[in-house]
Length: 288
Image (cartoon, rainbow, N blue to C red; front, side, top):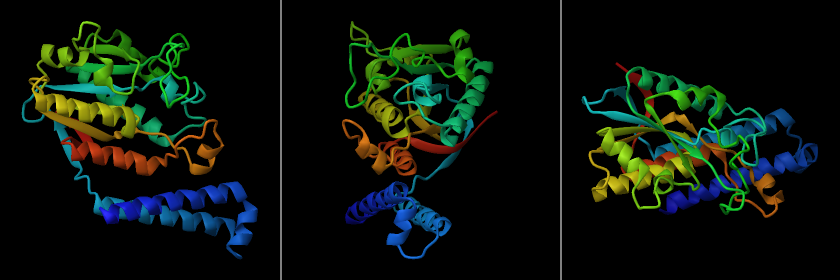
C-alpha cells in the first residue's frame, strides 16, 4: 500500500514538472541550469517512462490474447460512448481539441471488431452518452446535449445505426448499466444479455477509467449477484479503449478548477481496477 501511495505521489510530481515546463517555457530552463529544451523534454519523457515501468511492475495487468469464439461460448460486443462529444475534434466541451492517437486507434479497432461481429451475426450493444440541456451531470460541464450532434456515433461507426445485430442505447449518466434502467425497473443491458444468451462480453470504448470501468465493475457485481445470467466472463480490450489528457497546469486554470487527469496513468489504472474486480484484460483480439 505504501509503495502504491509513493508511486502515485511521484505521478503527481511528474505531472507538476511537465506543467512547469509548459508554463515557464524558456524561462523554466534558467531555473534548471543550462539544460537545453530538447534535453529537458527528453528527461521528462524518460521520467514518465520510468514511472509507467514501475506501475506496470507493481500492478501487472496480466494481459491476454483473446481468440473468439472463446471456449465455444456466445459473446457480445459492448461499445461505450464512442460519440462525437468525446472523440471528434472540436465537438463540444469534452471533445479533444486536436487529434489524439489513442482515440483514433480506439475507433479503428472498434470499427474492425464491430464489422467482424456483425458479419457473424453476433450481438452488439452501443452506449451513446446523451443529455438534456436542463439536466446537468456534475462534475462535468455540459456535453453530448441532445440535438447538438455530440451525442451521435463517430462517423466511422454510423453504420451501426442500421445494423440489425446492434442495439443502440442512449444513457444520461456515466454508468451504462445504470443508464439502462427503465422507468419500470427493468434493464436494457440485462435484457440484451438474456435475450441473446450471452455468456461473455468484450468491452471497448471511452473513457477507460470512467464510463468503461464503471460499467465493467457494475456488470461483474451484477453477474456475481445472479441477475446477469448467463453471463460468465467480462473481457476489456485495452487497445480499443482510450481516455483523455488534462495536465495539472490546464486543470488549475479552468473555472471551476478541474481534477488533473494524466492520460497514460489513468488509462492504466482504469484497466487495473477492472482487472482487480474480475475482468480479463486483453491486448489482442482475433476471430476464427
